[in-house]
Length: 85
Image (cartoon, rainbow, N blue to C red; front, side, top):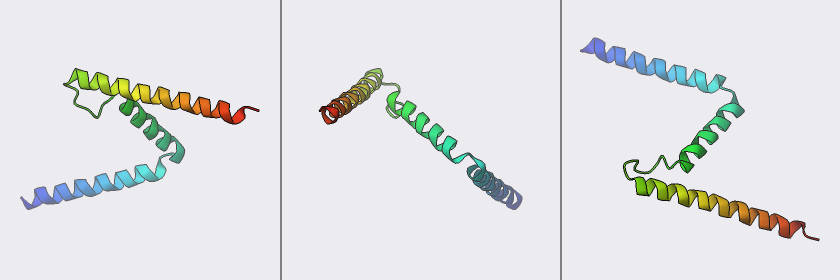
């Protein structure tokens, strides 16, 4: 039993060391950009809602897409307003 606990501790420590090495050697910009892209994809694909409820998934996707479209339209209208002479 004691050996099993020691093996678990060694594995936990090894994982922690590998994670630290990965964080230190990972390209700083590329890793963050990848994380942002993956989080954006997950957000718009509604991966955070109950996947068994198709109506909720579809509604969430539509709502998020419409929110994005509204943001783009508002940003474009602000840009047009500010650049008007």
